[in-house]
Length: 332
Image (cartoon, rainbow, N blue to C red; front, side):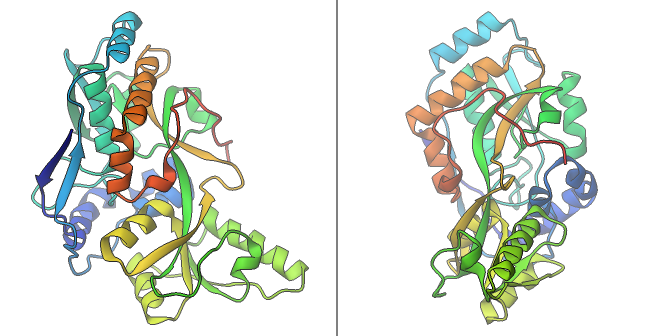
């Protein structure tokens, strides 16, 4: 069942709120996520509000999933608060998770996935806002039952947490909506282009590697340019000073949906050349991950999962099934 809730999405206003929250955690966040994801969560300068979409759609279940409820009962897991699933979230930017103007609780893909998991388990959804640096200790100590907040699976994290995957982490090439560029998939596609990218990020390494391939083949490499904030990069793209931007797909896809000024023309794995999985995380060995995985598979099969990703423009990051403790990115 889809429940629409008027919450007045104002991107500029939301970013201003995020700046207050994220300003104190940006450094810690960068230490705990791959560089490309840390960049996506960095606060931006407030810009003029875009209210093209003024209604947030929350997708919920009408009834619990019997198999998930049975698995939870058999697991012996006891929630932090009886009858509730306490889910940690860190708010940064749409579409993943942020606090809309005039609201106190987070919205976005990650909170909605957390709410659906709670529904499937027959528990009340209890969201808690946490600083990114605080979630690992909070999960391990039992302060929170689960986190759904764009957490990338890594081999190091798997030593401390159990994971149930629900998205593929992707990087995206974005161009102007009226650009003649239709596809960027490999080194040959960026030859001669001017591309904005974040310094020190994984996406920069992708472009540098592709430029090496181009130069070795005697082709013109791409020119890489760097801006201090996304607003400046957006202005440069719209004015034609650059041909494309390359960063986290989540923010690029949402911008394309929200503004209509850009389009995503290429997707690259977030852990390139390896696949990076985004997953719900819980304390190691506490029995919760199996019921969560059953819950995720149920909402994937039932179509609610697709509704969430489609609303926020992230259908390209969908998975067919949830996997418990999938291969994680190696330590850098």
